[in-house]
Image (cartoon, rainbow, N blue to C red; front, side, top):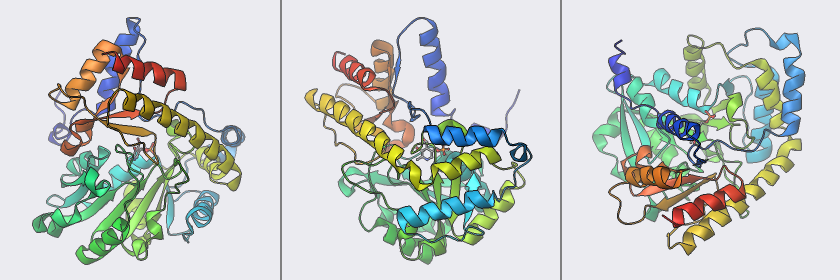
Length: 386
Ligand SMILES: Cc1ncc(COP(=O)(O)O)c(C=O)c1O
């Protein structure tokens, strides 16, 4: 059966392929340690689960939600942004729920891009920043994130012709896959560029709540002028161990959010109200203690992995945020993919090749810290003994 030509433009989603391989290995009795996908292994915090249980039992949540979202959800997001980032949001026009950040980022491409338009995407970067524009019939133009610049994109190297056609710019700090934090001055530079070239800056804020060593991640919207040119996509997936719930919000520029709403009302029917009510509990101040506890666990895991890699002679910078360690591929492998394939076949450990996040990720691999300490140690031990 023939699929659309549009679909042929994107490769199969990396983790869909990996899931298949891992399932086959496990079925044949192999003990696979999966440090591939960034899917937290810890459960959703108990108060969130309890709130959801109450909400699911309430028949008033069972009908079609509105795409605009519940008033209390939008107010909870606005209150969180005020408390956490000092950012003021109008809950009526500057906040809307999304069915996960992935949905939101993808749909922004459909809402803002026409054929011939460009989306500027970080390289390496979350795959939807490139798959989204392609599926929308537009063109992703890559901005290299260089380690020497703190993984800031080289904005001044974007070709003038691409900048002319650009309608969207995707940014993400704390960053997947590199674990980098927002470089000083970058957000200000992006606001200036977006203003000058009339493009929408989309900051993917999936990891702001997972930080270590006293680092506190900012919101892009704290930058003066950001709300005039940008939106931020805030996901509850990672910070609250809610990847399966599909709960996120888009915040910022009201006009952009209105376009997103118009698109979505033609595509989906909103976020289950019981999930929105779970989100209200998640974003309340009472949950901060749980987030701190989670960060302590990730920090210990990070130290353990980075120390073990350093002892094995791998040059790795411990990240100040996210659930990822980004490390160079050992010499002797023709590509990161070849190394990761070797590791899966010989050590039964799943790690992801940097090249899957863009050509500039080549030469690196990503370890996800989403396994208990004993499994992480075992995984690093297996890598070392290869
Ligand atoms: C940078 C980034 N954005 C978005 C997502 C997806 O978030 P969600 O679960 O809210 O769709 C991920 C998940 O790995 C991510 O790494």
